[in-house]
Image (cartoon, rainbow, N blue to C red; front, side, top):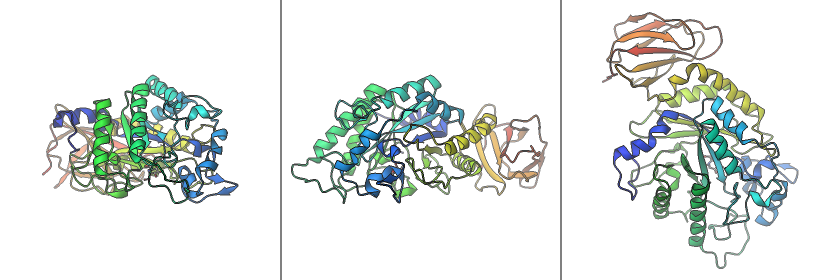
Length: 435
Ligand code: FHN
């Protein structure tokens, strides 16, 4: 359960806030900023590390990094194309980096000139994308980094930053950050999520985290705030260590928890290659099948999948990402009901043939059997505590007969020809009740 914030709350307040998130199950993460125009290359050298950490990977002083301002001109940026790409893939929300660790702001901020209006592009990206999300029915959410390698009052200075710390006032930086958050909620809200990051440095404390959670909650009562607003995240495993800490959901990164945790909301964020921000040399792309299995595995454990794209310096989502999202979209158009609005596998075991998701309903629940291997011909599942009344293969007219076994049921899964992951929908006479 999340930290009780200042506003009077009951579990139903939290559940009401989380309803769309739990229904969505699938969102797009977008890492875009000055670093996108460098693509991981600085002074002709392809730097090791992820693309959005260019400033750190190249130990680039602020005075030199500023040159990227003149290079930032994503002339191919098309907010409707980004929003439609997410929608067509079956993604119900998108989270854009409003400000990453380099402090650069993708909107026209009243509080700094270190923003998109100081580049040749001179267009408000948050304004354009929030409008496109509304047009395409995708919930608009924003990532915001607490850590800021550019702001003169942020501490600690990164190792490569030799600027003087005389007169530096971290409280003044926090006030700046809060003013910007008020600005982006007022100008581009209501937001689905404020997705904080960069909370790991010692200057950011539990007290500051609680205060920031309450501040954001006061800006928009139903906004979701991830657990990286505070200090309670258990590293990359991402779940909150105990309920003293603020945050509406946990944030595993580049990994999927081994099991779902009843009553805990969480979202695994992952890249398609290995870099969040665009990196031209990073061609280590996961296959569409692997990405789809991740989505299904995460949903079967009651979590959300936040899958990342890193648009390039022209503002285009890389073709390799678009191809994979297209493949996922084809599957989701046939099988999306087995992901959206589902809850975790009710059984104590994970089947060898794939995964199970569940949808609560009346008069009975529904099980979705996700069969991973196209060569699997027959699947068995334990007794769900309610009698199966019919089975059907999503996207086909096949209605497999359900047979009783000593420990539950089994049924044939027809060969659908393609090497796709098949889903069998099993309607039950009543509610699942598994000991
Ligand atoms: O340092 C960031 C990184 O650049 C990226 O934004 C990821 C995405 O969750 N978060 C931090 C690393 O944990």
